[in-house]
Amino acid sequence: MTSVKLKLKEKDVQKIKEICKSFNNDPGELINVLHKTQEFFGYLPAEVQEEVALGLNIPVAKVYGVVTFYSFFTMLPKGRYPISICTGTACYVRGAEKVLDEFKRILKVSVGETTPDGKFSLTCLRCVGACGLAPVVMVGDKTYGRVTTDGVKDILKEYENE
Image (cartoon, rainbow, N blue to C red; front, top):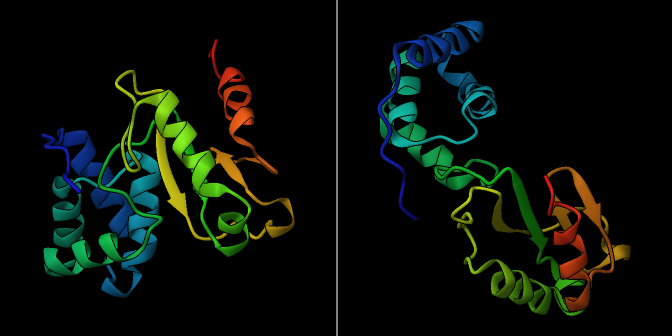
């Protein structure tokens, strides 16, 4: 996984400092700080991680370790409509891999990538807790159940004019 090189603006640096301060610059609040920071930036590139490390007075390696360990955090920008395909056991058994392959084919991106227009990004996740609706696809916060390869086009069509 590669990260995007980014030059932070002073206002962005200040925002990270504010977030750290809102958690009393407590290193034990690293995950909460990262959540808030990702909420603001949309992702956590190396430069943002460095500022968080400074704000919490911890090594950058510790921040990086947390960012890369938890799948919720990302070092790459997500698309306006992030698509997540559940590949947990129930979804996998019911054809999630074929659904994923169809998204990859239509969007011409691999897992972890964003379409060139920035509209869609594609990821996999382990379980969304809707096993009875397997295979499950999420676009942002919207959940689609019992998705088939034919249904992929219909899902994408909903976001065509946005």
